[in-house]
Image 1: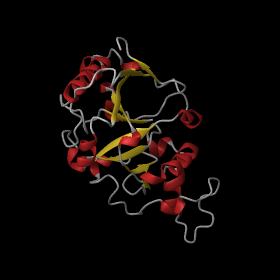
Image 2: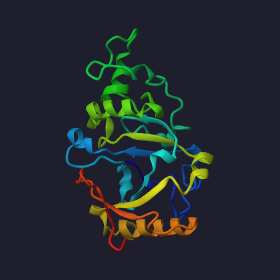
Image 3: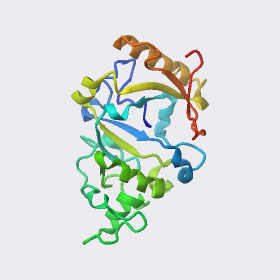
Length: 242
């Protein structure tokens, strides 16, 4: 599943349309998201890894329909895309293309001029990988990327809580697709009644209700969910009253 935490890229300061360009980082033309999978439990332990720096999870997030958006690139760690125009540009080490057909057990084997840094930062997400120069995987290679991420990703020294960062094309492509990309809103059940923002559940519900009203939808079209980060089997359940 592809999820986006409400962190000022879209749905910010009462803006409920979901339109790209309305958030504080709208000028970047991208939206940052994270892929979560059941298999992450084997690598990352008891808590599903999602972006939670600077208390981002206090406002909840949205589930994005992957088939409704264009994935520009992926990284095995948070690379601070808010500081990179386009999200996938200005990467000094290029792309991870040469690892698309690489062995999962020895990804550098057989490469004509393997770069130790690039191999580790494309496939093993080593603690030595700089967020300013980590090469991206192209969106069309998401399956291979996830194979490496699930095997090697999440080293605490390089990757925070272990989440990956997916860069989605925003701008006109995103705006013209709305409301289709937004499948659901959610809040972290562990933060349901926190006072910050008058509670994650209340904030997420206000955002969801405003979104469906804006686009002429119903709450059945875009449900509000509770997100249990400790439940890899069934992390999303309908919120009370849905």
